[in-house]
Amino acid sequence: MKVSQFQENIAPILSARLNPLEVICEWRAFENLSYQYSPRVDIAVSPFSVRPGRNRTMEYNQLLLDLNINEFLRSIYGYHIQNIGDEWLREIEIPAFDIVINKNQNARCFLAIEIENTSTKKHIMGSMINAASLGRIGIGVAYNDSVKRTFVRILNYLGFLKRVEKNTYDATNFLILTKEQLESLLNIEIERPVNT
Image (cartoon, rainbow, N blue to C red; front, side):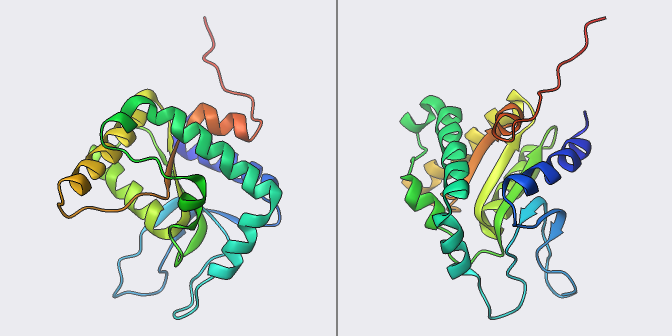
């Protein structure tokens, strides 16, 4: 299954799981602002902060108190720690769950999800930065083991830059999932190759 088809398939399931929040595929953060670069995330979850001077911090804080949403995010956080594995022994700092969910106070959407399959490392880094910048919580979905390793290596690199006091980007609120983990969280039957 192509990533675009996977994205279209999971959006309504994610919407049902996070009801009544709106889920939009290919969401643009700064539509109709010709002078502004407008990153697009694969899937964004409302509320959306799109009017200048108005942020949705209080609404995001309220959503985080919802037991269904909190449990869902804690499951993602648990998978993220599992996916990082022993990398935390190198450069990646694993902050507490409460720090992750409260990091990006001036987000443009509640969740920003990027699904990656075969992109370049530079493209994947851009996706990570967009998800972490735009979402209260940014989520990277690795479609395969290679992308998962790339996500982890980039987090490791950003941690290294911080440790040696170089310019870096704080991706504290960026969590890594595999395609299979997301399917499991959403109770989707995992697609298996057919043996012929």
